[in-house]
Length: 124
Image (cartoon, rainbow, N blue to C red):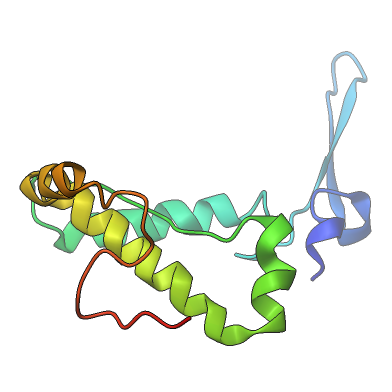
C-alpha cells in the first residue's frame, strides 16, 4: 500500500447511512503502514508502550539527532563526514549528563570546538 493513498477512496471505503434522516457518511480505509505519517502514529505509540514496560521508573531524556535537510548532500558527498555528527552527538550528551564537565570546559573556553574529548583524533 502506498502511504499517499491512505485515507482516500482508492483503498476502499465504508459507507454508513442513517435510516431515519437519509444522511450518509463515507469513511475511507487507511493503509496501516508504519511508514505512513497518519498510520505510523499507532505503531510509534505501541513501540513507546513496549519500551516503557521494560524501562526503569526514573526521569530520563529522549534525544534525537538528525541532519538538517540543507546539509544532507554535504554528508552524502563524503560519508566520512558523518563522524562529525557522531562526535557532536556524543559531546552533547556528555555535556548534558555531566554538569561538572561542562563547567570545566567553560572555564577552559573549549566550548566552541568540535573535538572536546582527547580520545577522538583531530584530522585537518
